[in-house]
Picture 1 (cartoon, rainbow, N blue to C red):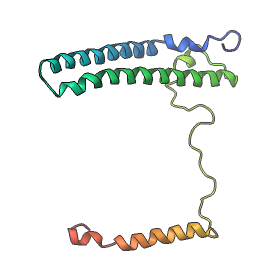
Picture 2: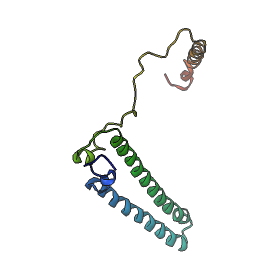
Picture 3: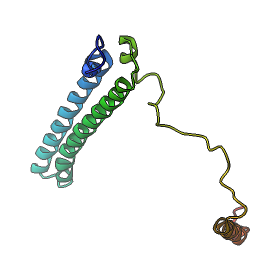
Picture 4: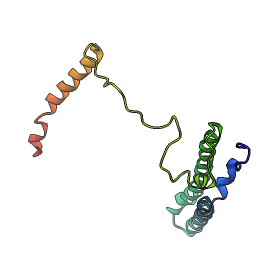
Length: 148
């Protein structure tokens, strides 16, 4: 659980936004199973191409369940990391945690302070010479094909 007085971590699962995602997931899952059943009946009726879809739709349904479970697991990890680091979130912040567009601490892009070009690096100089040689070789290559 979280800090004293805070809501349990799992409470995000019953937020209106997440309830909508749950409903969409259930409808999509049953829809894909129905499509598999429909393709099975078409295949039994003589449509040979439907045999492939008969097995694909249930696989898509299973994949969607796995994806859904991983999405929820990732959200739990993010929220538990926030609770463990001492970040006290209000109810509104917990409900809108995915809307902020920010990543958890320690995840993201960091700007390199110095460029990686090192004039003393022999391997890098050799690679740059190789790239320059390739560039010289392909210059004018498209002239024969009408490209410029």
